[in-house]
Length: 215
Image (tube, rainbow, N blue to C red; front, side, top):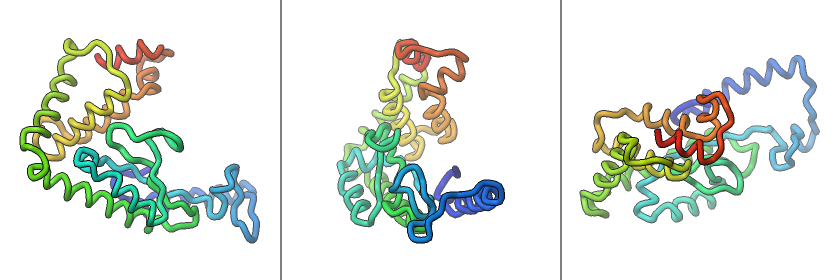
């Protein structure tokens, strides 16, 4: 895993590790179908190049479906935050990947860049689509809730993702200037159910996780 659109570096690392493993482990290989995997759709190279994009502006301007439809026509698949069969949360559209496992990482990178650019262009036109105060109010209100635990006693994972999404948008637009994107990104991870239990070093019920998340 790498930050940004650095798929080529991911490929370089995976390819090196694959070569090292190949010297010690026999891989199941078919001359026609390529490398055989537990899932038939992964047969071939066994390669899956995927990315995660944060596209709140496309969601808020109701253009996200048009972009996802265009991605599908290019032979790509957009899955939910937690894999196949799940929905996007926090305006994140992860697991954007080629339908065919033998497609090159370059193809994924190109499509990703186009989708991300669409989000950037839409974000830049926010003041033309919305009243200027709307995104500022949303980001500001969500940041206030994040900063003042007294305002909230419990926060679900889905709700936290939505709050952090607006805060991240505010950071990217320059509305929020005293928090950097890295801190927001870390909160996206650390407030997930498994991470909360890891931090607490014990199993927590759903209600206990929601209470810890609010703190």
